[in-house]
Image: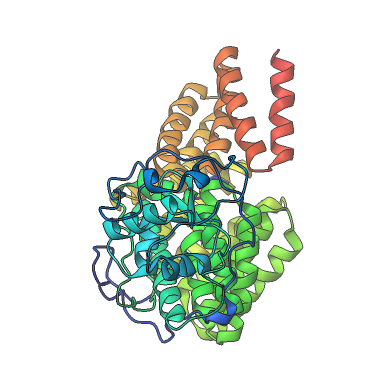
Length: 489
């Protein structure tokens, strides 16, 4: 089904974060705390890389009073590229280096380092440049740094202030991830994140492109942060990171990452004893299992989500469980059951006044009517979904409804109408960075091109679809499209 990606359950608003303009934040019952003893340090040996180009970010400026490259002793300059470098550092650099070693992930960008160190971005950039010139750090990419192994003068180990620094860094990543998710999908609800520590300055991302790029660049570090948070007992951080990243993983087709994060978030939700968090975790664990082709596991999660929602009488969470249950039944070939649950979800979303979610459920019902051969009802429900999505400026819902209308036109022999609908759906998918849905729309667009005698266009569409399917490890779908390509040749 051409689904828009599901969203977390509604949550209270956030209280404004200090020193930045991301959406306001409301304190959660549990702050983001990371115990120094649980922090993973960097590897004990990192090979130095050749000098990197200057960072593209305008925030990264050379230090005005640091150790310049020209002042490094000749013995250091003469060392081959892959040999250990003898550090040359200024007073105070050791503490900066120490904190960088505590940061999760393979490296750190300047804005995140600013929160870790509780300094401004320009000051952080100057410190990182100075440490790089002095041999304590190296650039892994423009604007990104990683510390070198411990020099004798700066032994590793916990120090006073480590916990506060790591809470600042965790807050930076979590609040920026939440902000990025809502820049891409403004209709997503705000989450009750922990208040920011003094000195924490999350990034401001001013476009969908910037938000997508940040999530793509930082998802390895965010995964490491989730693991560290779990080890240190920060259950709400584990859960909220999963909620912030779910849309991105769905859009990008990162099914394995989605499964791992919801396995952790599910354990966190049950440890917290929070019913709404448990419903959310079970439904998204079910969604991830279904995408991975593990349908019995998916159904077990979704049925559990429905039971918890019914017990607590919450129409919104119950509706989401029914909605994802319908999608899982579709994957298992049970279209009639899927239609029943999609219609139930649409009614519950209407009661909860979740209009974008109602549009998703109406479109799902239209999709199932199409698959069941009822073209009249299919067009009625998909048109309602498209109208509701347009009224609420919901691009994901528009893309899904247009994709469904394209399939309906295709199945009723109106291939030019199908081409028009698929192209419009693809434009919205690309705006949102939804490569998962884009692959399916390209696949079906190729079918309509082939049906209208345009083999070159069909080859292009199918070739692009197969490439995305393979990149997302959707190998059965890729093989099916590649067989069509071979037959076309």
